[in-house]
Image 1 (cartoon, rainbow, N blue to C red):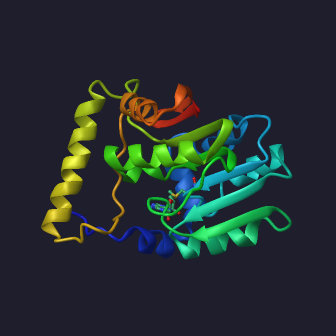
Image 2: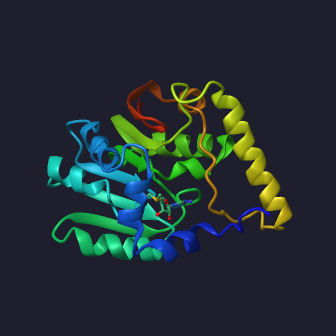
Image 3: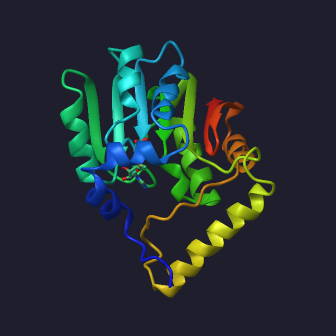
Length: 224
Ligand SMILES: C[S@@+](CC[C@H](N)C(=O)[O-])C[C@H]1O[C@@H](n2cnc3c(N)ncnc32)[C@H](O)[C@@H]1O
């Protein structure tokens, strides 16, 4: 019998109290993976969009490097956002409890955009559309940084087969449980690094690069 899937926001709401400890201990790259994204932001970053910001683990290093940066954080879990609010008094943070899949990201608004450990729940078509909207939200010279769970060719002989199996399992479990097509559920469907790079390029980004990796936690940068 397969695991019962939980709706995305409920999943993270239910785990917000223990999230910071359990999440960081459980991922490849651990705490380092929350520090590196800040180092990859462009030096001129004054405005930053963080998609799936959660409790803001990656923001500590962002504020160390850019004390005056204005952060716009998006997340569908209200409990995760409440935890974040307690953490960074005095910093410029605007939070929105929305899905980044269907909210207005604007046009030429941000110097940089960041997403850490959030997009591995979505498929190619969803990601491509999202990447197009992120690209549009960036100012000229803007950079998008994604540090996420991806399937690295350094870690397994056939990354595409692993990706295909995970998406097939997700479709099968959704069908078995009669889940609502219009809602998002928590299930990890990471893409291969090669597919990630292709998706970012097909959304119009140039200079897409893998710049850091610890097993299957991979950081990509993409310039507009
Ligand atoms: C694993 S946590 C990562 C949080 C933080 N970025 C970090 O690295 O610690 C994933 C976050 O993405 C959020 N998320 C997932 N799907 C989302 C969506 N469609 N729109 C907004 N937030 C979403 C979840 O609510 C959760 O807070």
